[in-house]
Length: 205
Length: 213
Image (cartoon, rainbow over all chains, first blue to last red; front, side, top):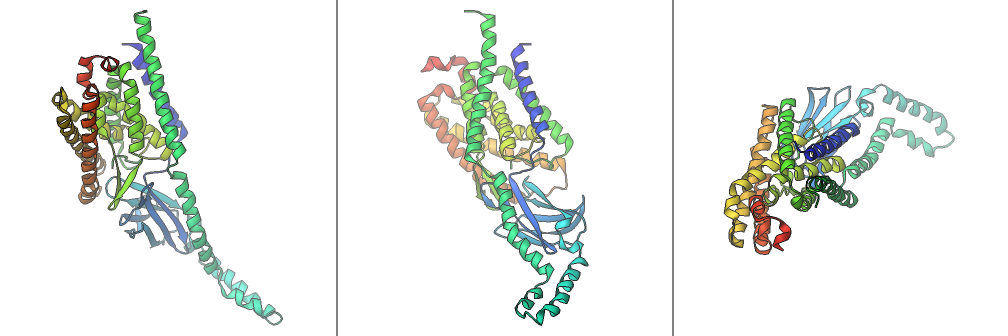
């Protein structure tokens, strides 16, 4: 056996080992982002670099095989499904051609988990209101917005931001592409270097 | 599509793809000679960039594979070229997956290599026109074979997996045509400018690249 292919194989193995050590990447070409808004899960599915994934299957699962809800994305790749579960919910989108993406929404984000807490909070606010209402009439209007509505409103405002952050992480960046080309040049340069050492040893001329 | 992510395929299929790719890699690296290395690097870079640019087609998105072109120009070296490209795509962009590297390399690289090997005799002393047609046919057959392999590994992994034939046809149809046109033009151009580049077999007989210029 010539020594150099082994060395290259070793190199490839080392690269593979590095990859495994770095941990599996969580991004896919098809991506889905979801967030809990009130008691429903809203989000969007898209192909990194080419836009929304329209009309693909969306499934909400709690644990492994417990399907809660399923539906399809709209023409803009967006979806909204009612979530009834109590645990973490996994959103799976499947374009039915080998593209599959997952996203997990934590149980704590879902409103349906604490139905008792929300009414009591709004009740407390409402209870406080009459005492202040006599002297300062203007703020009395504020407690009319319940805590639950507030949370939903905030969730709605924050969701696009979170989606953007998520999309940014998997966006194609020109420096990454150029860097990749650099890596390729480097890898093949290294292979060329390793290969060039052997003939020099075999026939020194 | 060709970049199958982690967590879709079953372990035996992943292992099978890994073994096939490992064997092909070992064989290709053994055959790889220094003179063709720059060429392999350029095509690996081309594959890396070309398969990043995806275009939305219907409910899915497609991107070039260029496997037919790679098979015609660098032969077996297309396997390491695709492998390196896929590794970098998985690391930088999360395209495909780390566990599916073997299966994806097999799906993308092998059809190009095998179809190019089959058609290589037609390229010896070919006119640019004939080279273009051979290139187009090899590219189209490679894409079609990749589609079949992807469908095969998905259904082998999970027989209940609902692979939509309509969507696969919808996405691979335009890709097949696009690849055929691009590879056809590339081969026609190469046959005119530097005929030695086409066909790994012709290359070995013709000697070094540097001698031809």
